[in-house]
Image 1 (tube, rainbow, N blue to C red):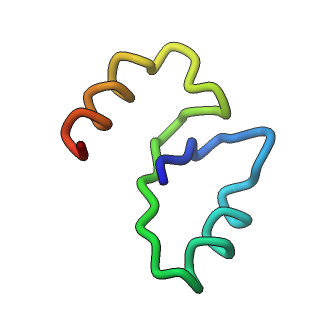
Image 2 (spheres, rainbow, N blue to C red; image 1 turned 30 degrees about the vertical axis):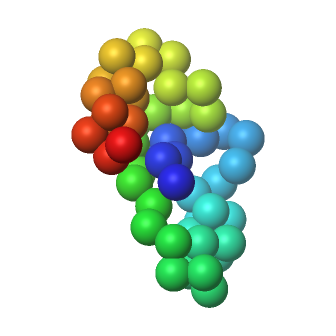
Length: 51
C-alpha cells in the first residue's frame, strides 16, 4: 500500500488500522494527497522499485 500523508479522502490512520491486522506494509508518501498531484513521477519510481 502506498498512501499520501496528506490524503484528504482517506486518513492515514484509517489505512494503518486496516493494514495492521493483516501485517501489510504501508509506504507513506510525505506531503502527498489522495491523487498524488505533482508527485506522479516520484510515485512511478517508487512503484518500479517495489515491483
